[in-house]
Length: 289
Ligand code: PAF
Image 1 (cartoon, protein in one colour):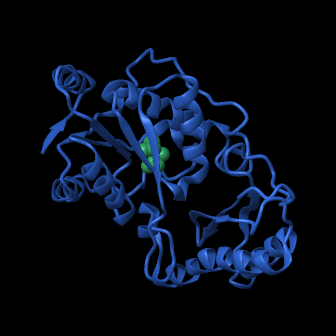
Image 2 (tube, rainbow, N blue to C red; image 1 turned 135 degrees about the horizontal axis):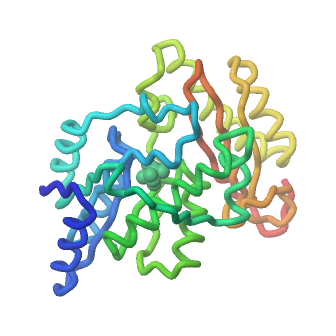
């Protein structure tokens, strides 16, 4: 496995690969790898000739006051995991190389980025501007055939799909299921912040989504959302949002169309911000359970 530290090294590799009939898979990460990343890396390894993992804690997707400075980092451990998973190249640039002095361009996807995590009461619209700017830069630098993302960040996946389509990136955006701990908690680098007590309470997030799914099948969307929110409240967790949206447009869902519904939640557990979601499948077209 080779580590590339600059955009110039990445470009040189891409130029070298371009002449060969090889498929390239990109797994963008901010490091502190967990089994969710492993599943993306394994899929890339199975589908592509060459696997590139980017490792970059992207400062522009953090709001002032968020956890940029304390975001968990362990490059040596990440390199070892990447190597064991069969990664060929790690692209791990420095912030100054990605955003040199004078850098002034932002990539923004309108409409999908002002709700849920992008709302002012959550991470704000600047969060996704940061995400789409860095992912556009990575897609440009690596020029992969496939780029892999996790369904845990469902809104991010929707936004990146839109951007890739609008800007005509060649890469096929692949979104893979959320990987969970045995008790259901979605794998996240931020789980490392949780104390044992907070870790225990955090299980209420996935449990609240499962409760939502169960009630949805019996009683419909509104009672299901109420049940999910109540479940969180009983665990002492006040969600930043707990909302039903259509996954492609992120428009609010009312459950009348019979289309699948994304129920997405963000909540702080003892100061650690966690997100999760579930896809509700109405039983048949046009049905309101
Ligand atoms: O999902 C993440 O880890 C980040 O948002 C990403 C896609 C690597 C961009 O920094």
